[in-house]
Length: 377
Image (cartoon, rainbow, N blue to C red):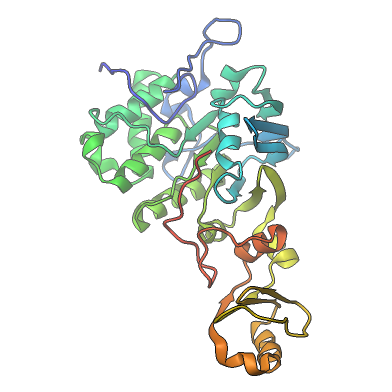
C-alpha cells in the first residue's frame, strides 16, 4: 500500500510535523512498538499498553521540571513542575491561554521550551528527543487525518510511522478501530466521515502503536456524546493497563467522571495539583450568586459576602444557610433582586477560590459548557 504525504496525529518513530526515526547521532534506531500484536501483553481482548510488573517502586512516566516558555512578551509557562505516574490519568484544566497546549506540545517536541527539563520514562526528552517521542502518542487539537485515505489506511500509516511492521500495523489498526468504535468505517475515506467520527479516528491514530504515555489535547471538544463516551472509555482502559494519560480539557464534568487527577494552570503557573475530592475539600465551597438591577450601594454586613457592582457572591458550604443569612440583610434592596444561582462545590469553585476568576465555559450552576472554545496556545 502506498501513502502520499499527509498530516497524521500519531507519532513515535516519525510524525506529520517532520520528525524522523533518526536517533540523536543521525542513525536509525529500532522501535520496540514494531513487535507483532501477539507479542504484546493482552487484557480484555485488546493489546495492552506497556504494563509495569513487579512490586518495587517505579519512576514516574512523565516528569517536568521548571518548564518555561514565552511567546514574545506572553509567558505561556512559568517554571512548571509536574509528574504523571504510569497508569495515572491527569487532566490539565485552565482557561484559554493558561498554557495547557504549550505544555503538551513541549512534551511532544512540537514546541521548544525556553528552560526546564522533560523526562519520559527516564529518557531526557530535550537531550534525546527521538527516543522520547517513540514513547509517546499525541492527538493534538487540530485533526490530522488524510481525507483521501480510508480510515484503515490512516491508522496503518500512523502505525508504520511509529515503526511497526506492516503486519503488526494492520492488526493494530483493526484493534484501535474496535477500541474507538470505528471498525465499520475502516473502508471509508476519512474525508467522508462526520466530525465526531473523524475525532474518534484521530484519537485512534494516537494510540495505534500503544504508547506508554498518551497526550490528548481537547480530544472531546465539540463532539457528540457517543464519540465523547468512546474516548473516555478508551482512557479508562488504557489507564487500567498502565498507560499514563495526560489530557487537556474544558469539560470539568468529564474530569470528575473519570476520577482523574487534576493540574490547574493559570497564566502559565501551576496553581494546584491533586485528586478532585482533595481539591474540593480544601478549596471548593459552594457559591451563591445574587444579581440585582443596578449596582449595590453598600455591602451587607455579613461575613463571606462579596459585592461586585450589581452582583453579590456568598461562599458557604451550605447554600441554604447562606441564603437564610443574606436575604433578611438585604432590606429595601430585596425588590431589586433578579436572580439567585447556586454553583455547586466542584472544580469550578476550586478554580474560583484559587484564582478569583470564574472558570470559562462553566454555567452559573456549575455544569461545564460542551461548546467551550479550544485553547489557541
